[in-house]
Amino acid sequence: MSDQLTGLESYEEFVPKLKKAVADMPEEACIAVVYSDIKHFKYFNDTFGYRRGNRLLARMAEMFSSGGDDFLCGARVVSDNIVCARFCFDGDKTIFLDEIKASIAYIEEVLRKEFMCERIRMTAGVFFIDAGVRGINVETAISNANLARKHSKLDGSDSVTLFLPEMATKIDNELEIISTIEDAIRNHELMAYYQPKIDSNSEKIVGAEALVRWIKPNGTMIYPDEFIPILEKSRQIIDVDYFIYNEVFAFLRDRLDRGERVVPVSMNVSRQHMKELEIIDYVRDLCETYKVPPKYLEFELTETMCTERTDRVMEFITAFHEMGIRVSMDDFGSGYSSLKLLSQIPIDVIKLDRCFLRSPELSEREKIIITSIVNMTKELKMCSLCEGVETSDQSSFLAGIGCDAQQGYYYSKPVRLDDFRNLLVAGCAR
Image (cartoon, rainbow, N blue to C red; front, side, top):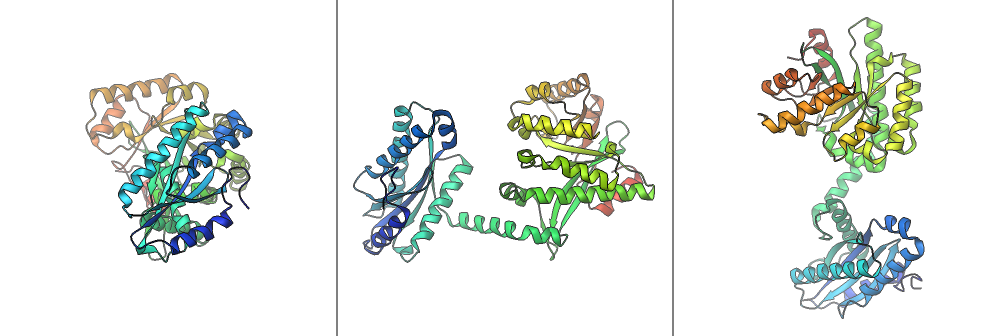
């Protein structure tokens, strides 16, 4: 039974048709499996209505199926996802890929004009079935084309992407992380590392940031940039955050009980927390359980997060301020709305992004910009901290302009808990 909306085959009809086409394919020929969708289709539906969105899909499907003699079959998989098969007799995949790209570009242009919406963009993934992979399961071929589409969507550099084997390897790695993270938390393979925050004038440790590290049983370390973006997509990042929060609260409580020196520790907040804000009750319960004075607690929101969900961020900050907990804006200056955000959001600490210190020797323009930001934070009664400090000259400059605190490898990389305890005893990180 065909898809009523687009007139294309159903997926159940498409698969056997593709199988037969592959079986009947001449040795020198190839078949391109093209998996496509409309980028930001939800935006189009929300803006123009579902009825017009349905017409857009129907027109897109019509153009695919009437694109030429090389069209074999097509199906709507789900929502705006359409897969089709195209035939190339001579098997010249380079020229064929260029033709597919040109076809997608043409369909885009027509749809933008007909529906009077310049934001209509398509993404597509392509997988070639030729003599070398003739025995491949066609559903695997479709899946590979879909992986290429997802890569195109994430990469953003090209609307049409050819499948490469490493894309499947990347997905396998992601699935491995997703499937093992719960055991990793349970088995304490995750650890809180602490990077000191240094007072610019005294060069004493005045705080720390808690950062997650994943140490495998064989001693291999998986760094955050390898697993955090993956867990962000699966929402498992929330479990990781909660694990680190518990570690930090337990550490602070232990030092308080021992009568040892305690400094505030900041913890990172994932954008996933902004969807439900369950984090507010979770942190409130931690405060009640561990009885840690709020002056030792700080939570970091990224500048991007503040831009995306200003309403939720305001609710978050209000709740944490009511608990007496400071909130900082991390990565300040890495986005495009920094100054506007400062006028809207009552942040306590501004953390200047490490991009400001990308050069060991700062130019005069860079110095002027950093100085202006630091002066502005003072006027707004906020504290300033600069990340990524790696040289003595950078540190001296920041101290000279009145930046409150610094953080970076010049003083200390993130270290294990025992090493951080030793740094606190010494009182400084150098």
